[in-house]
Length: 414
Image 1 (cartoon, rainbow, N blue to C red):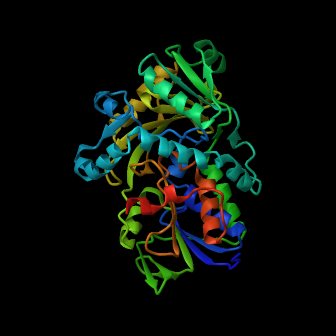
Image 2 (image 1 turned 135 degrees about the vertical axis):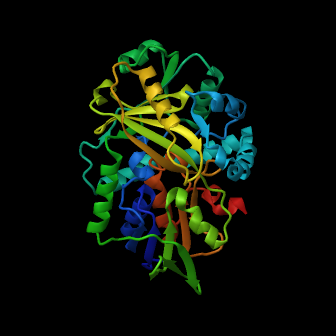
């Protein structure tokens, strides 16, 4: 087995970049992380729902989704929105998305999401054993609830997760009330995922992992990497005024990764699902665990900052401003679920890096053997940070895994 130690540069200081760095350090490699922002500043790794979701194998490329899209777009309480000035840019992505909504493609995505999701929490446990996470992770499960609309979609979700062997418990209205008595009784049914966990403060977890990386000799350079070129096969990262030479590099900068992969002559159809959050400070006592209202596509997580309300999918790219109607949507939905909420705080917009088949890109560049990718994890970047980093560390260290990694390769877009 090749035990050579490499000098590795990682572009991206979010959960993907930091987890990649830690697993590469475990293999003895010399690692430097680059990012234009400080770790945990305003990224998706800061603003996400905080869920560790090993059950979430079924994604948006579903046989039941396309017929519902027009109604979702027209509903002020619905989970989907468009920035109309971005529609022309999205048309190629949407066409690919439609082609990935067949039953065969849906099950392909579910199978290979399940393959890595099943390993997600054990991979995090390896990292958390080295960093004190006391008080930052709750092991109380995650609950989904729904009303009496679109029950066929709920049945589809339950059926496919049963087929994959995912641990789930169907809930009656009484059981929902017993678990979370403060939720207003609009619900028809629900499901409970006992193996799921949630973060009390995602930013603090990321920073603890990052601090551990630095204590182990890792370096962080706050700079915007704008280009990549090569001396023979040796990759060189370029900022505005500097260059950095490495044996291997990892591109792990989420929705911004396409700016670099385009320069590597790979036409990876990465776009962003814009997601939002708000907080209701001081009201985290109203819920014991995260609760997702499936019909409206949003969830509420009790955190140190208060109740974090997260959700919606807005297609609008990286440059459009925050949408006040999307914030209002979260406020109204939260107040539909819970009584007594005050004015909200902390309006936030973040970017979920999403591919039209709803599988991430994990592995080698198509064109450059010393370039690796770890991005495109859509709603599950937080859950899949550790396992993605572990997979990349094995690839770079020339170690075998017992996983079928071909479905995550960028070659699928060739």
